[in-house]
Length: 113
Length: 113
Image (cartoon, rainbow over all chains, first blue to last red; front, side, top):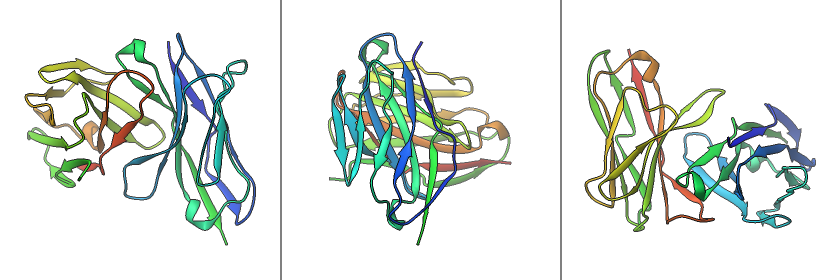
């Protein structure tokens, strides 16, 4: 079946540090991959996506590359800011499963000044 | 353009009481979803709908019912609330099948005592 495994948190970084949050997936077909961000008290917002192998999604300084050979979609940012403090979710969407999404458990990031 | 809205934002129920959560969207999306979010468990799909008049079960459907009588609304019902249903509930929409992202509402925090 389909599933997403992402790095356990919480993660605490100093401002301007490099961020990596690992995400791996299993899928029966050809999924699209997503990263969502959730700020305290809010719903999830799309951060970036990639729809096929070797695609790179990017937004707000965050990047992730769809690696089919390693079934991974790791999230990276070169220099984090305090405002990046949030919970990050990796997700897989596959249309041959009724268009259901599969979410990881979330990784909490805190950036300290 | 309100996007995805959820009513109510907060609710406290006693065990055995019933209630209905309303999700409304103005984006003309075909697909709608109900998730619950619990600490350490990410998002779990309760029920979903691929169009007006259709619904299907997700990963954790027991104790919930849904209806989609109009394309823009997706209702989640709890017939007899239990403390295990204490959670944050999110509604999401998606344009249609394929590589499209899901859009989330702000959530409903439900406490069952």
